[in-house]
Image (cartoon, rainbow, N blue to C red; front, side, top):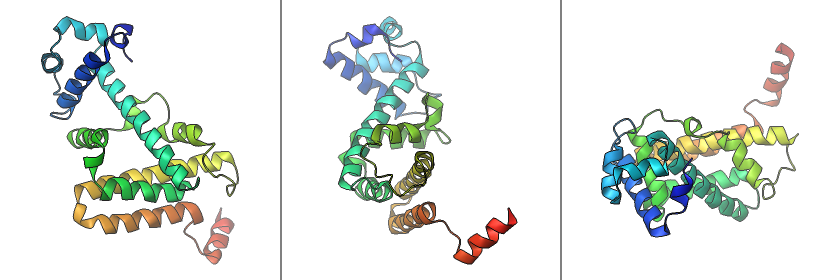
Length: 210
């Protein structure tokens, strides 16, 4: 992701460079972002950029990975608060991010702006692994999986619940006046993932038709 030269920089210089990069990627879309602007804001020679990162894509991936790891850490604390119940965790995350807004988390604010500037951006594009499964793998000791048929089932349910959470948070940020509605949608989607959506008769009929 980054060169060894970058890791050897003094912390203040690394932070200044990354802040300059975030400022550029939250100002314009990824396609329009300029490495010239980044090095100018950071106050480093242009040639230094390529001693730190291979290219703009490499730098962007580094920032997104940092953000992901930050959110995983936050998520772990919330899951601990929820007693290992990741369905409850998703609702607590929604309350924390959608209702309280981004002012309490600068990195969250930056990521939201990046997503707004880059419609269609998918985190899988800048992640070498599967974010949902990676998160569950990191948090498996804290998660209560006792009610699931198997660990694989739990992983898939967890990934689906993350998709539901992300969609409702983004919708709420775009239309904050509808936050209560999106919170209800999230709760409904989580209940569908947890309990299914068919009545007992409907489930029996569905099984007979397969």
